[in-house]
Image 1 (cartoon, one colour):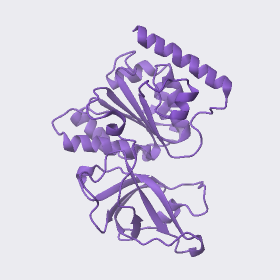
Image 2 (image 1 turned 180 degrees about the vertical axis):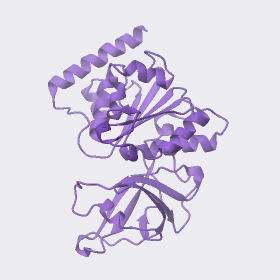
Image 3 (image 1 turned 60 degrees about the vertical axis):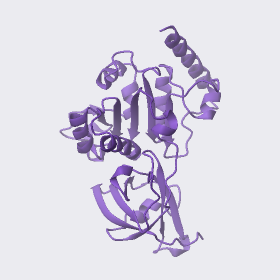
Image 4 (image 1 turned 180 degrees about the horizontal axis):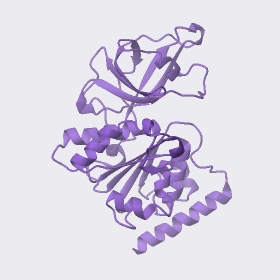
Length: 316
């Protein structure tokens, strides 16, 4: 049995978008360490005790922060109820019973290196392409909000958020991000994968990784403000957050533009030298390998495509 957790935080507000998608705003009892409280893109670990089935004990899970550090001590989390959990004591099934004022465990220190500063430093001028599937939007919302608050006079036209979900109601933060796009130039593209079940939807359709299909890429580049052929590592860096399918397909499609993943195993399988800088970073919400590195035919094809793209980029 897992050790019972001592609660040290309170759920101060819950916003339900659908029956299975919500925002949770949580505040710790004691002030979180500042300077800063966290870096956009980081996560903290939340935990609950299973009061109805105490024999199952407690459960903790890492959750990306959606709020900006400049917004203060109340942290915001964008979370989906897991329909097919990998354990018999899933955190979301406990969390969905929570209401405002309920207590929760929250580790007081944010961690993680899926941040612009860790990946690129402070002054990388390239366009930031942020690819989100579902609640993978959380770290990118944090990045956009933080930029808006900390640098209010600067345009956000150098950042693109691509967000994919099943239905329009699953596009959390859509109104806010559209507002930032209209006000500060953020490039925001949203797509749904089940348009037949979404009467009245007139926006983009398909999965979010479909923005990088060969037949759609020129249009995507134009909408990002990069121009046809502009989505290359010299001009842009890519961050992906979500499940295996989105991450794997985005990587595969962008290998044709010469993008180099940060992941060591992938780099070795693609035969990329250690001194070649990464231009693609990802954070995964499941455990399935993003690309089957044991599939030799696939890997041989991907290595060839990457070499061709890098040669072309070098010549250009």
